[in-house]
Amino acid sequence: MKKRGTWLEYKVTDLAPVYVNEFLIQTAGASKGVIHHYRKANGLKVNGTILSAENPLVHNGDIVSLEVFKAEKNDIVSEFMELDILFEDDHIIAINKPAGMKTHPNSPGETGTLANALAFYYMMQGEDAAVRHVHRLDEDTSGAILFAKHALAQAIMDKALQEHFISRTYVAAVQGVPRPKKGTISQPIGKDRHHPSKRRVSTGGQPAVTHYEMVQSSSSGAVLKVQLETGRTHQIRVHLSYIGNPIIGDRLYGDPSHLIERQALHAAHIRFHHPITNEKIDLTAPFPADMKRWEP
Image (cartoon, rainbow, N blue to C red; front, side, top):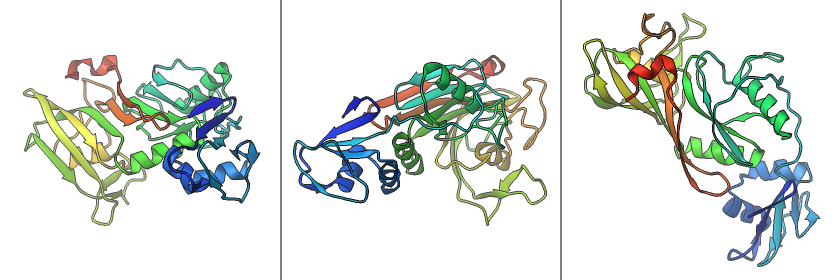
């Protein structure tokens, strides 16, 4: 694989002869949807010839190209804010999100979110990329969050997330000591019909699985490492409250705390394979000042 201008080039080798769509699925990790996306935008070539609806056989030595870096319109308002960048290359960027900041706007023209800051950053770097989040963090949760820089990277990362190939480890300070100290909470989560922004364990909800392990404890509570198998809204907060150990400072699912002004939850680690190079990437997000006391 080679970058040439706004294109990524893939040389056909062992798989030939094979249809170009199948080649892109097997070699580039592209989905049928993302291949269609590039076809519609005249962004798929074989040996320099643009393809529209054709799906020809390709042979050893042929060059298949996708225009993944084509300039894109960004509908998000650009706004300067400092970013704590954990990793960046041409394809993805990982950021340590501060607490008190939404991941993305919920309405047109909204500002003050991480997506606004990233749009500004792209603009200053001369990158005409849309802001594409791979996953989200709650407004008052800090830590590592991933964004894709183009449609191919996003499609690959979306699939990896769906198939549980992106490992996300959180650190949560909770009230009380969980029993058992290590376990799995497998309870469906749905909307709380009595509260517009709240979720609850519900038999009619979506499947949700959370793994936790206690790493330290005191008379007032415990520190847990938590891993998500699914990614439901407020999942960790709902599940820990459900087992009787709400997160310290969580006003929605627990109680306010004099120790911290928000829920004591930090996305500390994220591990995944790079969507283009397949390199193993393991990132750690430094703890913010308000959670230093609970850093394992």
